[in-house]
Image (cartoon, rainbow, N blue to C red):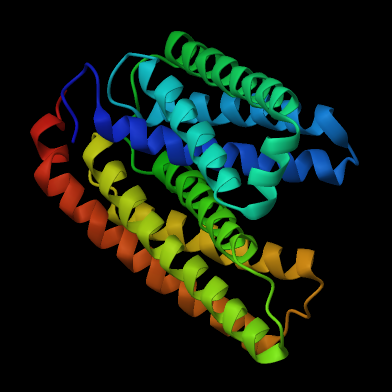
Length: 269
């Protein structure tokens, strides 16, 4: 996964997830401040790219800013693919190609500029990545938060991409598929985040990975419940805690594999 102090493919994937997490956090922050319209979109991508790029550079063993920039490109490409996979997205494209192209280029530029600036400041101001496992709690939490966001968007695209159900039974079936997609997506995201984190870290980060991943998943479900207006009762808390613990365990196991395969080879670099 990691290739010494130069380019690291694992850091590209980690940057991708962290920039997704940064964009999600920035969007929620802007929404809470009642920032709306194009300003919200551009500010979220710029701030998310900056935060994701900054922390991705701290997590990366190398000294290049290329990985966060590639991660930002990959995240923007993911968003474009998800939008175009829906009927609504294809309809908007057919009626307003120029406007959608302009918007896509603008938000891509904001994300890329933010990631580049964040990574550059991080590398120049703070130097080499840390040998401590403690900051990895935050790094993994951001990455898994990004995975939760991508899983939610993929489930929403799947739900919007089909034909509207004709009865309540079909609607319930669609909702079950959406929920399953979110859970599977979070599981895959935990595995991916843990794997690349273990491969990128300069020390063993197993407990930090479990704590960061579990905390991010638990927070995601609590936030999703509040946004949906659901009552957060004891059963909901127990369910979220169970899913968070399982997701953290998946991330921990993946981090152990990443550390064994790639991390130990560069632990002293």
